[in-house]
Image (cartoon, rainbow, N blue to C red; front, side, top):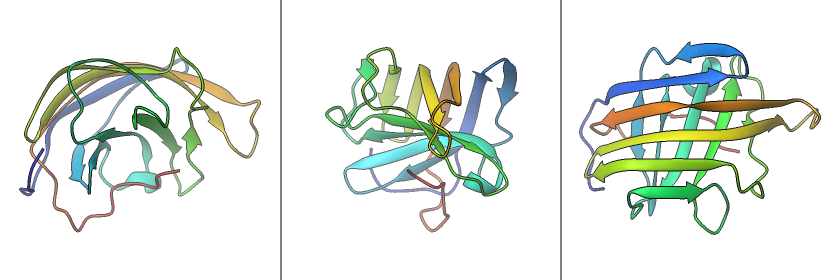
Length: 144
């Protein structure tokens, strides 16, 4: 991954619990040593799904935990708190199918929990493709 352009194209489709969902837009944000992908643009104001991955991520299956620096979370919208993964479930994974500068294609399956009510959990699975970096000054999402 390298420097930024201005727009991200692609798609993000998922099943959120029992609901089929598709992001109305997608984003790819560069950071220092990592990047974030997800959608839609606007983060916590909208129902959204986001991921954080290290810059040097390679194709393959990656568990979501601190050691891999791979994570995913769900924003229920209306500026409410994000639902996060436990960081300890070996079944929470991102499969990177292809990755190059400003492009990643991946599928995912993980369970998030409401941090305010930990008994509330939701399984999320789906597919996303992101091409081109979004403007670096935009606020992508609320990372847990």
